[in-house]
Structure formats: C-alpha cells, structure tokens
Image 1 (cartoon, rainbow, N blue to C red):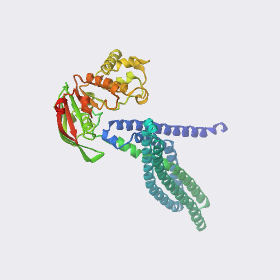
Image 2 (image 1 turned 60 degrees about the horizontal axis):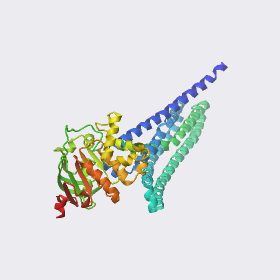
Image 3 (image 1 turned 120 degrees about the vertical axis):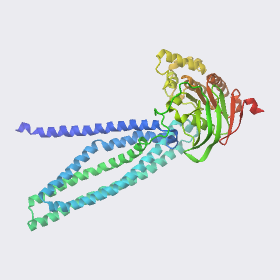
Image 4 (image 1 turned 90 degrees about the vertical axis):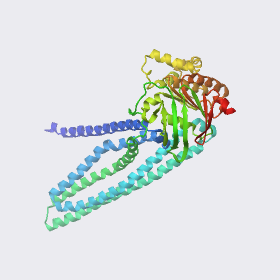
Length: 513
C-alpha cells in the first residue's frame, strides 16, 4: 500500500502540468492567430484608414496589445476556472450540511459581485485609455526613429522626447486610476470575505446554542466557505489581466471587423482583356475624410489619351496628387467618376487595376534588401512573377538599363546583390530614384504615374533621372506632376490646376504664349 501512496500526487502533478501547458499553448496560439488576422485586416484597409492612424499605433496593437490578450487568455483562465469551481463546490457542500447558515453567508456574495461588476466598468474604461495613450506614444517613437537623421540635423531630439514623455505621462495617469480602482475592488472584496467569516462564526454559534445543528456541521461549513472565499480571492489578481485583455481586444477587433470600403484583396470586379490606357476624369469632386470641410477637387473634367504624356502643374494644394490618388483608387471621389478605357474603375477588380499602374514618387521608398530584390518587387502580382529565374533576371536588368541604373549598379562591388540599407540610405538620391523607376517599369505597366519624381534632386542627378523618365514613358500613358513648366516641356498636354479646378491646358509652347 505504501508504494501506491505517491500515485495520487503524481497524477495531480501530471494533470496540473497538462492543464497549465495546454492553456499557455492555447493562449499563445490564439495570440498568433489574432496577430495574423490583425495584420491581414490592416493590409485590406483603404488609405483613409491610415490617415487617422499612426504607424506606431499599428506596431503597438500587433505587439504589446496582443501580448496583453495572450496574458489574459493563457494559464490565468485555468487558474480562474479552478478557483470558481472551488468556490461553487464549497457552497454546495455548505448547503448540503446546513442550508440556513450557508444561505446567510451567500448574502455577502451579492455584495462581492456588485463590487466586481461596478469596478470592472471603470477598469475596462481606464485600460482602454491607457492602451490608447501608449499607442499614441508608439506613433511618436516610430516617427522619431524613422526620421532620426532629420531630428539630429535640426536638433529637435529634446522636443520630440518631451512629446513622447507627454504621452507616457498620459498613459501613467490612466494607469494610476486603473491601479487605484483595482485596489479599491480587491480591498472591498477582501473586506467582505473577512466580514463573511465573522458573520458565519456568529450565526453558527447561535445555531449551535439553539440546537438546530451540530458543531461538526458548522465547522465543515465555515471551512468550506473559508476555502471557497480564498479561492475567489485568487481570482482578483487575474482581474487586471482580463480587463486589460478586453480593452486591448476591443481596439484590435474593431480593426479586424472593419469592412474596408476599398478592399485591395477583393476578387470582385471585372478585368479588361486589353488595356489601351485611355483615362478620363468626369466631373470629379472630392474631399479627404481627414478634412471633410475642404473640397479639394471641384468639377474636374480631364481626358488623358493612351500612349501620351500629360503633365499636371499648379501650386501646392491645387489637387495634382489627388488626381493620382483617385486613379489608383486610394480614395473614391465623392462625386463624378474615373474611367479607364471607358470603364468606371469602381467596376474594375482593384488588384488587377493597380497591376496596370506604376507610381514613382518624389521620395522613393526602398526596402532594406538588395538592389535586385528591390526591383523584383515590381513583378509581384504580374504575369512575369512566375517566369524562370533567368528570364526574371534579364527582365530586371533590362528595366535597370531603361532607367539609366544598370551602369552604376555594375560599378558597385556586389552589383545587383548590393544591399541598399534601411530605406536606401546607402545610395544617393539619384540612384534611389533610378532604382525606383526600374521597379516601376519592370512589369511593363500600361500607365505610369510620376509624382514630382525629380523635384528633390540636384541639377546633375535631375538630368540623368529625367532622361530615364523620358525613356520609361515611351509607349505608355503617363501622368506627370510637377511644379515647374521647364521640367515638362516635352509633355503632349500640360494641365494647370488651381484650387481644385483646371484653369487652362495645352502644350508647353501654347501655354508660354
């Protein structure tokens, strides 16, 4: 018999170990799935969603907030279920032994539930505010770190640090309120628990004196209630984890459940068998969601013929970049329609539409990988993506030659396998721009958009890049945004925009006259 006595303890150890590991694994697995679904949901959103949400907030949601959810749904769930089961079992035993005393002791449970329910409302509210403040602080930190060179150059480190500190102080304020509320809740609950002990002993002694029950029953009931009360007390430390998880989950699932009005992953919409590249803007009116009081386009009508170059000029805020944003369907116009080859782009499959268009912006963004992989990014989703490696390499080199980038690439020690550094910091502005042009044309798009692609370059680099752009524009419908007429002399049509309206258009010579 003695050899068998350890068996129950071993079985208990195995069961507890299995339960704990199971809950921890489940929590981690669920958190991983939430991260995947959150990022997938973020990538499905329209650009207007990001106008109001900083990159730092997204980073905070996908890291810190999912960690809070994981903490709230892992082993603490098992411990809480065990504690609640013990609490209920204790009172069931009490009712079996002597229901009158147990019923009296149950009266305090109502007070405990009331305190927990009332405090939980404030805890969830304060947790949400705390999470929001940390998210805003994360946005500031993200902006500072991504533009550290500018911060250093302008000596704004101290000011930016104070901005970050302000968000942390705001988070600390809500965190203090949160901890005070939890303290009041735990203190109130434990006071009622100890009050319950006193009430139980007092009423139990009266029942013994009156002869209604025996001492053994009273002791059994009180021990059961004490054990049950302590088990309930073990739930309270987990309350903060649960409420923080609820607050974090509310933010994350609001994004996961959000249906994007412009979903780039949707399979809906038609595709055209052949794209000529004719573009038409019909009576376009538009406002940005972040500035609903400002009408940025006011009845614009514009036809861009296939295979021709159309330039947009005008002062800042005149609506030039809005034209590109509407054509790419970053936004839908509030009035009018945009057509490609006579078809409203809102009826076209969005993924397919964007595969027909390439954009070269003023400040090109390169990925922290090799030149080869940066240019290859332009093939993603195109019919050429799955070609044999040799064909892909040839296509990439041809695009680099067309962009006047091949010669300088071959002059680098590692040629196309040269790493460009974070955001392309290891390359000059002109080199980055030429790689961006190569990436834009490697998939042979029918429509090319150039958003002030040379305005940030010096005179020497501008000449080289302009030559690359002229070569890249051949045979494509090209829309160029520029501030200066001198940079778009060869455009087939120059459109002058002022305050969201077309005031004149024509060739360079016609406008100069």
